[in-house]
Amino acid sequence: MMTDLETLQAETEAAIAASTTPRELDAVRVGIMGKSGRLTAMLKELGRATPDERRERGAALNRVRDVITGALDLRRVGLETAALDSRLAAERIDVTLPPPPEQSGLIHPISRTMEEMAAIFGAMGFSVGEGPDVETTWHNFSALNIPAHHPARAEMDTFYLPGTRNGHPLVLRTHTSNVQIISMLQGEPPLRVIAPGRTYRADHDATHSPMFHQCEGIAIDRGLTLGHLKGCLIDFLRAFFGISNLPVRFRASYFPFTEPSMEVDIGWNRKTGELGGGGDWLEILGSGMVHPRVLANCGVDPREWQGFAFGMGVERVAMLKYGMSDLRPFYESDARWLRHYGFNPLAPVALHEGVAP
Image (cartoon, rainbow, N blue to C red; front, side, top):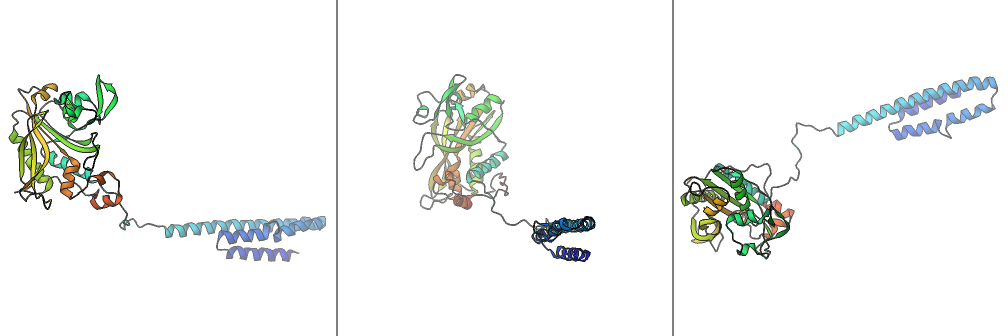
């Protein structure tokens, strides 16, 4: 009777050793110790044996069961370890290899254009100022010498918001000139600040958007003249567009917050759209000497300090520089358009310090 146990143990140990997967090993366990397993059947037969035979046979069966259980556990650990080693070998990454190519994100042309503006004006000593998009009518209009009857203050042109701040109605800023006011109120002259950012106007058609971007700047110092303003803007425009001999023209104009005021044009070809030639002129931005009343509104003595200011549309100069013919795709979140016009986020913005003649 002991021969059948030795045979069972030998066959089971051989089956365990031959198992190559946890599934095969579990099948061996069920075939031996399951409800219909061979060892289970032998244990059930003990009830028909005599007491002496049951004692001896039961002890032998228990020893075989313990041996088989230990062999099953040992083999299971071995299979799990082998599977883990195989997985680690297959998934191992060689950190010395270059990374696989991935579809990376791109910088939006508006963001890159404002970065380029900051780089150019930064080389001229300008810092970047910020202000709230929700502004008071005093910062947005009154402090800038824009009278109450001015068309820009009409509800058909400006987004008015409920509530007040310091007794003044709230609006979505129509320009970033509010940052110029904040800069003069919070700082002491001399100062040079540009303010790129979002602006809002109740104007939506084929060539206008109710939300767009502007970059405005202001310089306050003693003895500033129109010559300083012209030199600053000519250097910026030639550096930004990368045309060392770009024609620049200044025309008399009117803005409530500057006196005198000037529109700035650049040379271009009306037929081909090429910048820098062709004998035609294209208006590009507005500028002028800061009105003495604006300086006084911000606590700056206009008898001691003078300043010049300017402002331009970010989308407008971006479209001219990069050959874009339509404003609407700027805001449509079309990934195909961005893949075409977007910029590598790892490519730094060149710090232009003027274009050599």
